[in-house]
Image 1 (tube, rainbow, N blue to C red):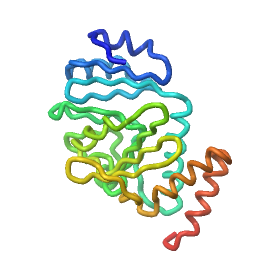
Image 2: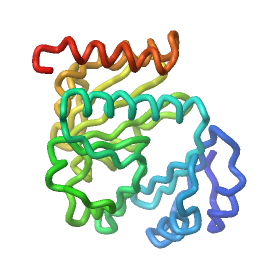
Image 3: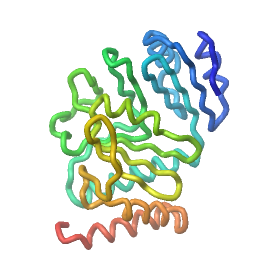
Length: 220
């Protein structure tokens, strides 16, 4: 749906679940005003790219996959004693680049020590997350890739409800790969397998199986 309007919040607050609305010719101030009006409301993702303002509402199914991926990484962090910082869907934005986005999840791994104990991010001075996650059950996140590339995000995980894809930044774009750079014990096969187990066996049993697999790794 493409809408020409300046009353963005009036449209956004009435959007049903699993809807995407695109506003053209929006300004950076429009984007920041909408972020302020929406506040910490859950169930929304807002992006801005050179005048294109996109708002997406989420389903419970979408959020369940996001939370499960978070749990997988959290289990790995604790089991393998790897410092991973979780910033969820924290807004990433840079006025100078006229770009902003909210991933479904984001992690700091290689640069976790740089972030330290800070709670709030400022991409004007902080590095971007080492991994961002996009769950594309009912929507397509490919138009967010140029935003991530402009920020220098090294790695994207994209899950479409069937398979996980891992993409690494190369030049100005992303290429598909088999293995995570940030967490090299994770491959597209491993992530896809445990997401499939979650669907078939339930979240708890899938996490237990994942933890058992982590314990079998030679560097555990």
